[in-house]
Length: 396
Image (cartoon, rainbow, N blue to C red; front, side, top):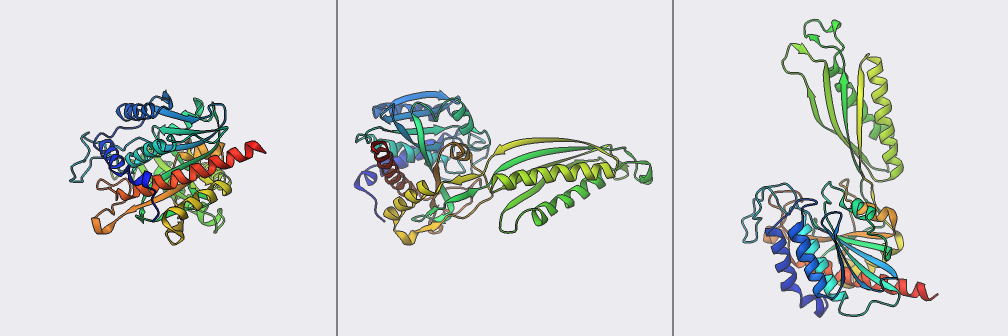
């Protein structure tokens, strides 16, 4: 492993920051304390700082404010979960926990900002450090973009890292193209005609129709999606009826759709609605279809991803850089990558020997803090390479 002296010198501070954030987790758009610490730290580095972006987001600038920017992003929010870890830095906020590593992301990026701010940015280039609220379902990235996060200065490329307990500490995962799925949600309300369970011919049974829909929708992935592509359709809630011998008037289904490409995403959405219309019409029921568009797929761009891969190899060696697994979870870094080229990569953080192997979003989630140094080193190297490319492009 090739960690620079400047990264190693920040180890204690980075770990202390992470543990402080872990002790004081805050939910999306409520990261007031976290944002205050971030802003104070960035100001102490001499950066130009904007606060209150998307309510609690913070942006720090280093370099040419009229140049082109390399955006480096960390998410700050925690989850509504009660921590079960018995550690000195356990959450002090009941029912709120950093169970996905965002405390580490914030600490890492602050260390990256400190290192990059110690030397001038290349001519015509600005480093833009974006500390984002509400990744966990709140879509904070989209709100920050709406409020100008990609402008003034204009962002040319974007990079983010995610601590990853599916990968051992000391390894890095990098992949071009899709890396995470879209995440959309829907609620279907079926309205029929209730009646006695012994006289079903007098009814229009929404429960039977709900069952038929659940099974019919499963054919979308198996028969309407290319087998070499990926999609997932899950019905997570079925609400209907009260007692055994009464057929209810209504049934409600709640589901989620996941896909790795925009085209497949739209195909699945269209098929869900087409099947819904056909099945309910056949059974003489009416329906309401309430669809909520969530995060798009997270798709890495080839050239920036290769730069990150080079930085990863320099940090941990070629044998420890793996092709990042495709995951059907979602991330709102996707909104940044819809607008500008960039790369979202993962930093191995599992250490089974230390008992640090719980999955993300688990009440016992924790990670090996050595991963913070690996992630920060890789981000610094990648940022410098990307900034040098932008400067060279500007001179052509």
